[in-house]
Length: 178
Image (cartoon, rainbow, N blue to C red):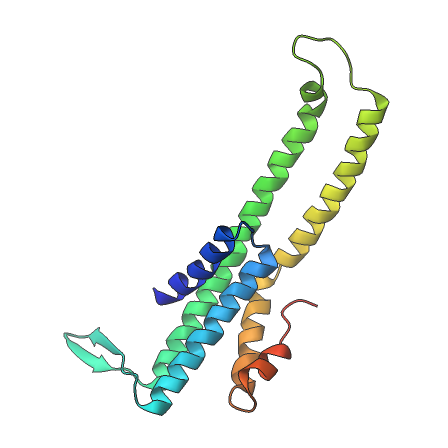
């Protein structure tokens, strides 16, 4: 589907630049793709340059603008829901891996074959790091929880304001997070 391709292209661009996208960045990427496609559909129908056909019951039928926008909304809703589920699974996996690393940290710090124990200083550093990691996990978990609803709410705000002002002004007023 075109929607996934558009969003994936934005993710590939970020990877090529050597950056990774946060959960918020990915959600905003999907929303940006939605906005671009919504505007493309509306502008195409208004200019008379867009025609989309579907094959139903053995024949081709031309879609209306409303049908195409409805299909876009349905696809975006599914993508948002799938995204939240996928990121929840990813966060749970990260939590399991981090817990395993913490559990075996004393063994990793000792030299191979050595019976030396971890010093108090090293333990204190681990404790500080663990607190920071835990805060990051909680922050990420808070972002993930309900993210699909935030994405859909942003799309609803966009649709409600579309055509009332220029896109830049409209988008500046829509905040998915905070």
